[in-house]
Amino acid sequence: PIEKDNHSFIVFERLINMKLQIVTITAILGSASAFTLSSTGASSTGLAAVNNGENFECSRRDSLAALFTTTLTLATAAPAFAREARPEYLTEPTDAFKESEKQRDEFRRKQLRLKKEFTTVLDRFTFESKTTDAFVEDLKDLKTLVQITEGLPLGIKKDDLVKIIRAKKAKGLWPTDVEYAYQSLIREIAYQQSPNKDKDIGNPL
Image (cartoon, rainbow, N blue to C red; front, side, top):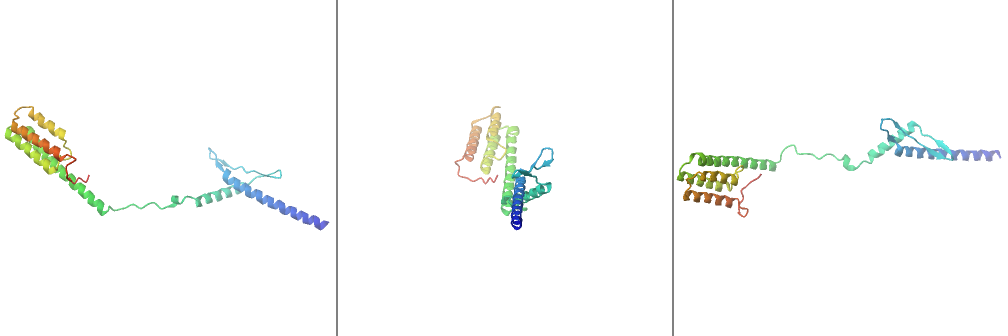
């Protein structure tokens, strides 16, 4: 009878130990998902487990260990894209970029030169020319510049050009030869600016 009682006690003790281990593991897993931070910065973790009517409280050390384990797990399971290296950027411009910049610079310089020539002729037409022959000559020079530019240079609009010429016309001394030269200039501008014109002005901008 004594040996039987000892055997029963040992079995009972092992069962109790197993239950305690299961409850402890359950409490640790529960602390990992129930751990929160309060708005005042103080943190507390409540762990509760019930088994056969008895309460078990996990110690602060167990809570910290559970938190460390959870953090390590989340860091290991982080998305792959979060750990990917940032793309490398070119530190030196490519040859294609340099060539493109060179073409843009050349185009700007050409446009500035043509604009200056246009402005020179317009100023002469507006303030210096006084005779019919001078008017005709200025209008022909403008037409030639339109042909060279294949339109109007950057910064000069057709409407502005027409206003300047009409203001001169309104002052009188506008015979037929001058009107013909003016209409020829307007037709040339319309032709050069026409979208149906088969040409390539080489504008890289």
